[in-house]
Image (cartoon, rainbow, N blue to C red; front, side):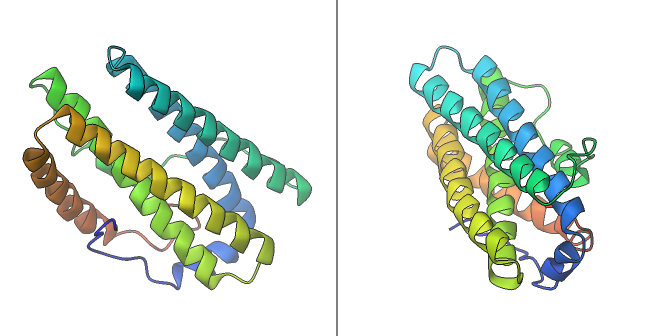
Length: 193
């Protein structure tokens, strides 16, 4: 569905499972950042009522995921810990359209969000299929479905705001760029690392 060009090596799940406390903290902060991103997108499309409504729902869902991860951390006797830098997301930011027409910037921000959701979904699938922790297997399966829906929403918004053919071409560029940066990821106990 996402057409990611470089899939995660399943052995990444072993790295994650060896330090669940760290992966859970990193994941919690990823959810908080996703909620913040959805709110930021609302400020870019206030004239699109249907989009605002959907983005509000996504922001609320991401905050709910943040809360769910926090509850798992607490249940396991841990603490949230400080926010983590997300090198993957920072690398994606470098590819965003700079300058140009406002609509192009908005479309690219939608594709940026779609890319993060696509990779997160793919990572959750790897966790679901490869970790031994049954509670987290089910949790990540449920989140995988949610992230797939968010991906579809962001791609749909981009196509709604721009010429679908141009958006699809730009998405192909995003896929190529993301595959190149992913070559240096997959060796840390972070959701995107």
